[in-house]
Length: 210
Image (cartoon, rainbow, N blue to C red; front, top):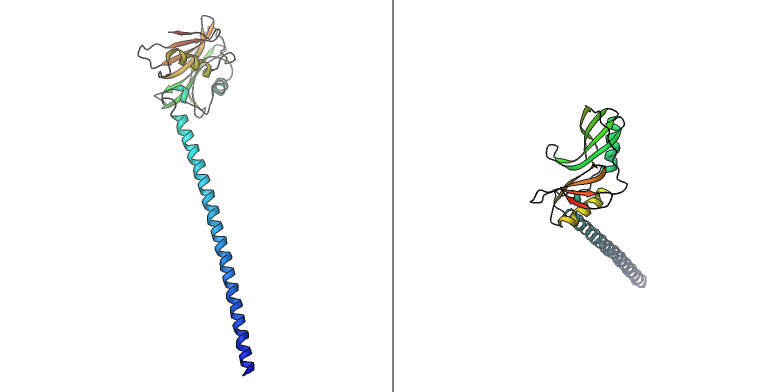
């Protein structure tokens, strides 16, 4: 009888120990799950906040200008790359005029670049998005032309001067860089009611109405 009692007592102690072990294990698992859930929640919240901030920043940048305004465009092909691409397409020569505006025919923003290669005049239209040559026309040309450069004034600087002249509400629809009577100038197209375009003169940064 005494041995039986001892055996039952030992069995009870073992069962109690196993129960305590199970509780401890369950507690650890619960702690791990809680910590994992907490970590997931924190990470997701941070990512969502960052994504929202970036999205709002993009919307602000896109909404700063009218969609017709050249200042609101960030073409994959910039003006320097357009010059290089046009000269390559022409097989050499100099660029004496370059324009950036929106083409209704192409349905996108395009560069129209004039290149003189010897006695051949090339009129080349490039996609501002891809740099692809969309159109290439050739004509014989006996006259000489003078090369345009962006060294003394960039298109962005010319547009800033033009905007100061006409006011912030006027849409600037495009620009053209060329020579006129020995002076390098930007011709800026606007949507102004008087239909006046602006001429921004590179040599003295003056702005006149055409």
